[in-house]
Length: 123
Image: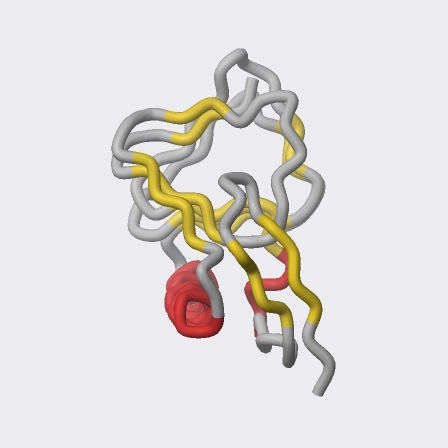
């Protein structure tokens, strides 16, 4: 197996090897567990969008793919995403957790998991 290495947003070492099966989750451009907001109003999402257990996305948000709001598909996607996140954590150091709100607008992020105990925004 061939491995490539790189650095994520915070310079942590990432190891890329065998692909992780994303299952149904591969179609999702965005998936929220608690809430999805749209600031400023009128964002566009290219791909599927979903939430679980949250049940809404902002009305002005344009989505090119399907929308699944806490239905059986959304529940299956969330379960798969939790498995994928666990596999990524086990294989690499590519997890960056922020204790405060973080703004990613205008940045190109490297591979990895970016999570916040509060909010992540992209303006």
